[in-house]
Length: 96
Ligand SMILES: [Zn+2]
Image 1 (cartoon, rainbow, N blue to C red):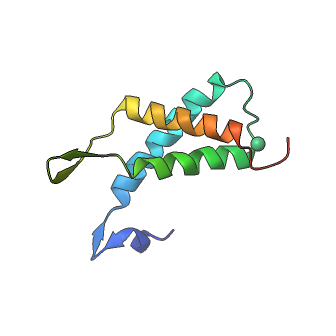
Image 2 (image 1 turned 90 degrees about the horizontal axis):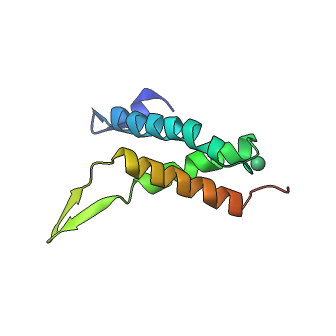
């Protein structure tokens, strides 16, 4: 994607995206080796990455009528990436 693809009314949201992406990548490197059945093919790696990024968005906490954005912790990223690895292992996108 081009840099301007990350702009909304001239404001760049690229940093927020990059921050989450690099956290997901770091946790993938750390957590995937804990799953001996993971096959390390490009389809599975990309699926874990895409699933993890998809799960980052709905992390909001409701406080009364105001929805506050919850700051993602190390533990949140770990849970999200672990959950994505498990989902990919359960529903492989390619024949075994
Ligand atoms: Zn695979």
